[in-house]
Amino acid sequence: MKRITVFCGSSAGIDGTFISQATLLGQTLAQHKIGLVYGGANVGLMGAVADGVLNGGGTVIGVIPDFLRSKEIAHKGLTELIVVDSMHERKTKMNDLCDGVITLPGGFGTLEEFFEMLTWAQLGLHKKPIAILNTNGFYDALIVLLKTMVSQGFLKEVNYQMLLVSDDIDDLLKQMENYVAPTVGKWISAETT
Image 1: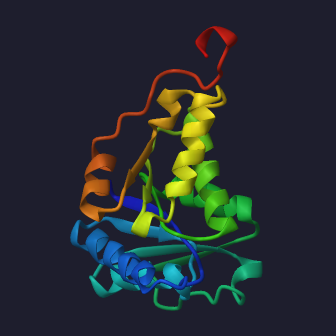
Image 2 (image 1 turned 60 degrees about the vertical axis):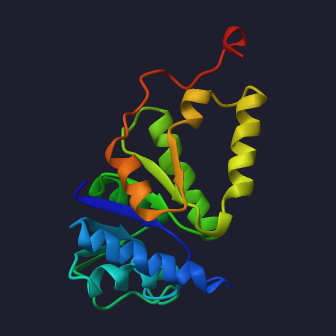
């Protein structure tokens, strides 16, 4: 993997572990010579992961919609900052630039970006690994919900297995390196439930 997109909050959250893990993820990406693609802000977890990569000598590409440049406070020290017109264009560009996705804690925007990339994978629009760094069990409840989707016939088990999860950065990167996308379609029939 040459570049990984990271989706995460523009806030820091209330647990300092979230910031320290975002910084550590950035440092680890730099050590592995993996570039970062992210939302372009210098605040919250977004700023921490970018600074971790930059301080480790790595490259960082930020992608930010013009209307968010002042709200999310665009990072001025990036390798490259790409300004786009819309949120959809931002996600498309981030997908185009990366070989995989890691999701850290965040809010509505983080989840929306994560689920769109996961849905694109499910539909076969890309074959990139989609991962969650589950710091302090932040995404435990979401994982339970996804398992309920499987048990209730709304999500195939093979599609659930597309999601890579770990609370350990090195383990998560190893899972991503070894990822093989499923070859079955997403649609569930009465016969397969």
